[in-house]
Image: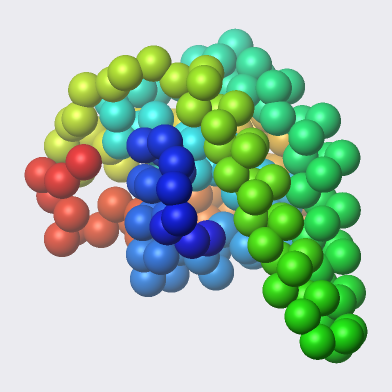
Length: 168
């Protein structure tokens, strides 16, 4: 991700994505268990704003981005991965298009969000773990081989490290 422009969620996501250990966990969750990175980050961002998501809100968010994600982002991701050894510059062009598509998905999710109230780290962790567990359940991740709830806990711990206590 890149800090180029955007709404509060986009800016927050860029910071969260760069937290040590977060990027690798997010990609692993995406590739091995079907998580949408933007929805995963949205679950954590909503937690940072003091919101524990309900099933209806999460379903609405998933529905709002599913066509865009499946029809645009996923094909671009596959093309980017396949273009690594392709003509010079092609990989970077596809990567830029994928990043723009990711930004659009985050705009959609941001549009579903309401203003929140920053909370303390422990409350953020609890809300993030609850939001992530609900999302995992929604996509049937617990039924996939190798999935453990420890993965969700670890991601939340990396996005909300102890050194971030008191920050929003």
